[in-house]
Length: 317
Ligand SMILES: [Zn+2]
Image (cartoon, rainbow, N blue to C red; front, side):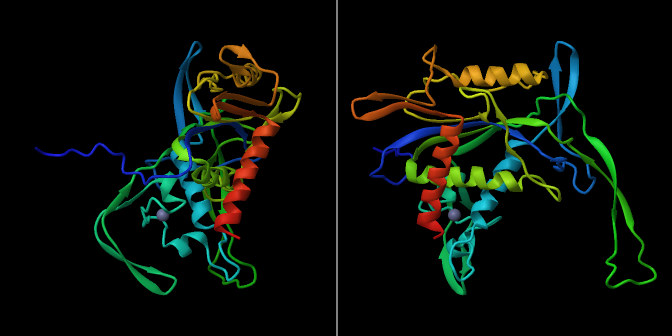
């Protein structure tokens, strides 16, 4: 009789696995450019069309796939050693070649794929790697701007350097679309059955990628501050759980009113088991174990920073 393997393939861990979710509202403090997925070199930003009661509107979009790419790069390019080695170089893990090892702090959560046997150069040495797949356990969502403002087209010019000028060199004008400043983007990261140690990479990448989101220049977003428990704190929620007991603070892409969107986010953030909570850390236990834990606002930021610190101490210091 044939034996069928039903195992997930994940290596055993002595540490408990949990689901983790990050919910946040990001703000771009300047215009942002994100190339449209299917259109290369045409300087058009990615937008989505949303049907609302007022008809179909076009909204700017900070797409989850692009956020994922920036986060992964922030791990690959993290400064790993004092002698100038980056984490990806040290692990032999980059883009497009991912090492796909479940022990790699990047591939363990972001996933990896080696389609055929290869030889990889790592820090001057060579390593043989066989065909391998590690399925990512982190997924990204959201990204549709709240405000109903279409991208604006700007004239830009590439100026030749004044330090070395030749007669034939004149500024090269080009037009590019931008997402307007102050757009708010609700975004979400979800982790499936990861250990706290594995999640530290996700926390590090989420926080580190904020300053680097966007293609070309300018870049960067921050976590928008608004009222949850305090009148002004990061619109951020972090969940760690076995059972999903909290309301998920997700803003409908059809919502165009800022106040309504943000108060809805805050109300959901404070809703656990259908009741309003009044603490910035909510913890439900079953025996000695965590059943559901939620960090809200400032407490969520602090907790993500603590996880990011653990990642840096283990992999970068
Ligand atoms: Zn890897």
